[in-house]
Image 1 (tube, rainbow, N blue to C red):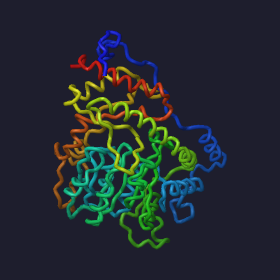
Image 2 (spheres, rainbow, N blue to C red; image 1 turned 120 degrees about the vertical axis):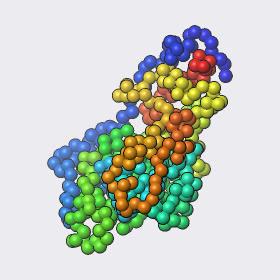
Image 3 (cartoon, rainbow, N blue to C red; image 1 turned 45 degrees about the horizontal axis):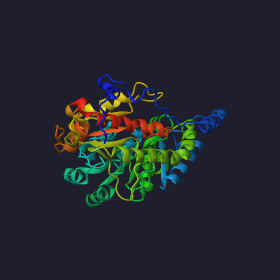
Image 4 (cartoon, one colour; image 1 turned 45 degrees about the vertical axis):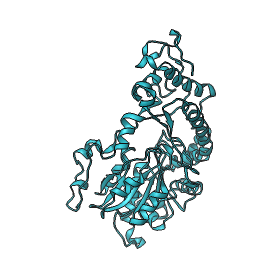
Length: 436
């Protein structure tokens, strides 16, 4: 690699000119198809058709049900149940698995907060297992080590769009008779050894939040191949307490319902977005491949590992940064890259590249202070849970030292846009002495 020493190439963070100032293009996959679908719903005047009573509309209006059918087909599952967010879907999934006060659920420390909060909603205790060094999902050995007689489920997250090690996790669940809930918020149509995520465990949950691969503004979908779990999910989504008597439901555990319902407008948008998903994913995969090949040539920058036969769908694109090879710390290097390139249209004040992901969740006040009124403090809970710093050393190392990720692999990027990002990394790498 040629070392650039000319003042023309002085790093922007040290007073030089940035490599690029023009904002990258906006990522907007809403088009005329979604507009027309929304207008068709608006013209009916029927923006939602749910009833919280035993009636055919307990299951929602025609557009909601059409979207659920299309999702079930696309994701090769028996049941797809729409909800108003992935968070709601996780809450419903925990409830459907009959999780109760005194129970424990194995969760990841390196994910959005709702993934670990879901057990608390039902008075259960989240127990954090460490993550895998290579794909950043739950580490099966750590999961096994955290299981107690109180463990009832494993909530596994396919973080960043990379499938977790599901063979090992499913084997552990079978051995201990545990439910497996897959949080697929960042992984639509990702596959693990040829199997679509969300169809491997007992329940899968997907996000349709505005910054996901496809979206309905807010929204989510729950998937399952289990008829009994599907019934319980429907009850939890929509005031199930009102229909257990007329439908003859005998197991009333967690059957009280919330209002987690999706509107007809959101479902109409979702139908059109779902049609676009394969194309949108292919764009990401091609762009991510470009970055893996080119950034991976920089000694000390390591792409995520994807298991053979599996497909990473890149909600964001993660890399590991090895300070001992590069010679400076991650934050210094990435801040220098950020100074060389801008963000994007509609994201002017939010960088598309960052260090770490989220602080390991057990370090948040709710866990440090045992703030939930039941859960950790419930008289039914007979265990002792540890939320001290150091319980998940890999997660802490990734967050504070090694992991960085970016969104420049998303759609609408030109070849020049992609090359500018790579050139920014190379400019920093080639002028590393300025940062020492």
